[in-house]
Length: 433
Ligand SMILES: *Cc1c(COP(=O)(O)O)cnc(C)c1O
Image (cartoon, rainbow, N blue to C red; front, side):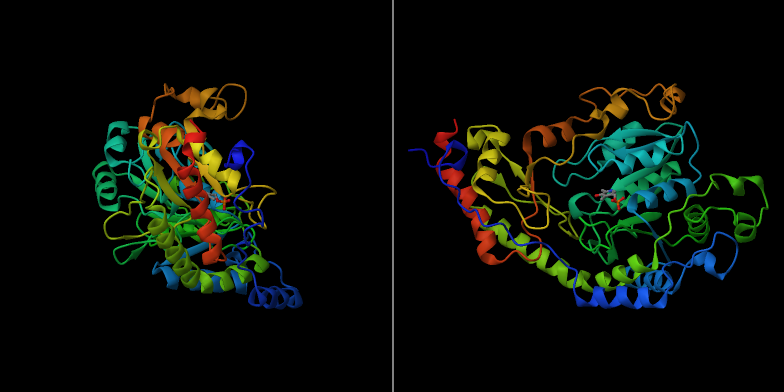
């Protein structure tokens, strides 16, 4: 008789795991307050007090700025919009090059493309999965204008080394902090470590308002431009004055405005961030301690001086110790476990790797973005061959394991079931080889 569920044995657990649901009475009351006010958004594109949005939007922005210790916080309707506005505000132009991690969510790189710039993918650190400063340096050319660093999985990027390099070459550092609200390096919050930081408030993130994003910066000029891009940019003359035509660069506005309802929810969610983060850290510590009994799973490494935010819990798999490929082992663990409530039907929150290295997606392989002629790739000699970022490929295809079982709402018994699934597969691994 086989024991492992993947071979027809009994599953270790079938009752779904509890949902991660941070929405409560506070959000309910906030939404009702806004609905009853009748003001669901008061944004105006013209130069007027309402150019800056309504009371909830402004309260959220000032609370966010105070929490993260930054001069400007600007709400938008998604982190994707936030990244686009950030690139626009930096004056990035067609044919410019923007260095970006190969291992991130697609929007980190499309932000460059929408302004006609060329994403140049650099490799990641083997321990922390963030952009590797050594790889960045090999990719810098006279056309490089910015680096998009990503605090991937909740780990702050290599701030000192990358900021020093950026300064040397006069490059903007845009920090994609979608996965790391509340992470820190030393005394500073992730998101405030570069020139511009972008947080996400989408449903899958630590805190959310359904959809939403926040851009932060200490730079007044960048903040002005971001507010213009967010809101049609027709007010550019009044907002910036046109001393010089360069003020008009990228002042082609979008509508990235957040509604009052979303802002009221995000305000409640921000208050919950500290306790949600503490629970993530405690749960992750428990997993690290318990999973230490599985010899083929290596512990998570955290950058010196950093506080990790654990959007997901990254682990590394040692195939030699296991005597099999990662995917075989992880498939067997997944087969033992149930899905999680409020997530897509039947999804077990355990994966090998994260997303496919971005340059392997069709957009880059075919080099077709806007229109028929391959713009903006046709402005460049760039190529995106397999093997471009070897560490990213090794982590994605062979070594990295991520799971989300450390999200608040999981009790000790739930976490123990996850651990026991790993133990069961390890103990019965002979069935798999
Ligand atoms: C979620 C995410 C985004 C995009 O966030 P949205 O708010 O959904 O647009 C961008 N970058 C990273 C790294 C993310 O995880």
